[in-house]
Image (cartoon, rainbow, N blue to C red; front, side, top):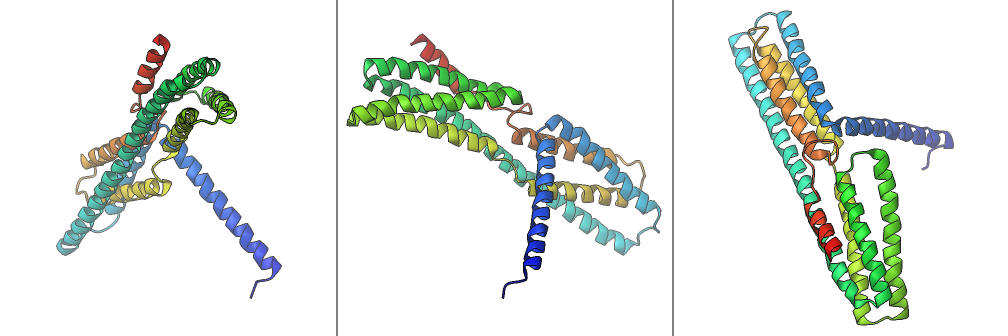
Length: 281
């Protein structure tokens, strides 16, 4: 049986509110992660405070018995091991995404270079137009990898889309008027050029899931609380070393996961070499 209209409207409203909350959390996490230099001090402060919170609760409770301390050590070691495994697994995810972006940069340069050679199959007027468009297109793709300005990136995406339309129109017109297998090779190569840009864009949008970040942060906070709770000295060196080590790990993860905001970036070496080669051709 279906519910009443009022009940269905209430369920839709709750689902909408839940989706809005999830979207807000995702946006906040993505914004923080996209600024790796902000991740390090923020995570260090939060984890350092977590250790001191654990020490504060420890000072308010009676000392642990020997058996309780043994059980606590087992729990502490298990949580720290879980955190290290999560960081290692997430680091592997970040590396794979970084390698994917590098591979697509190489594939994009190969696709454009191949189409530039295949443009010899087109008649003279179309040949000159396609090659000039391809040279401009390579320069646009180089800027895509090097720019950090959001406004410039939006304009760059608009210009790239316009160039893609002009490139496709140039080969499409010839294929319609002269549908031969030779012209079909040029059309197929242009299709590879356009597809490679889409694969590259998808790789740059592919980030470590927000749920993985939230889980790591929660477990890291719990680990530091346990370290502070189990410390026999209120100013133990662990209060600094563990938050520092985890914060550096988070910084590296965020750097790998942020194509534009960090130090570890994909350099368009293949596209730069291709651009120089096409300009001197």
